[in-house]
Image (cartoon, rainbow, N blue to C red; front, top):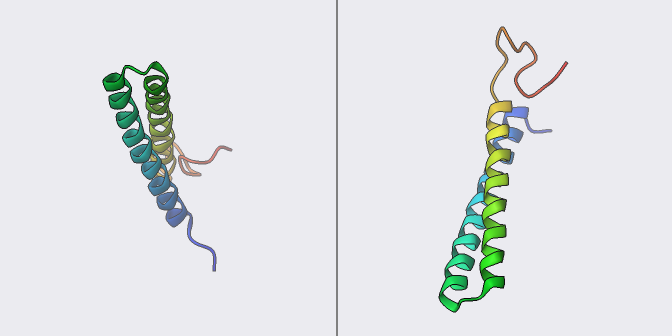
Length: 82
């Protein structure tokens, strides 16, 4: 039996949220260690992880918007085009 589209959407949202949390923790750790040790390469890695947080947040918000149900303006739902 295949999972429902709603269950797939929730699963994808959970995965995206887990990625945001993991990248956020790595960004904070690398930024902190980079500043404390005055290591520009570690600090740069933290900035890169912070960019990943931003990109993952955009993906997460898109998934939330796409999961909205159909309405009068979007008869096929918000996640599908014509």
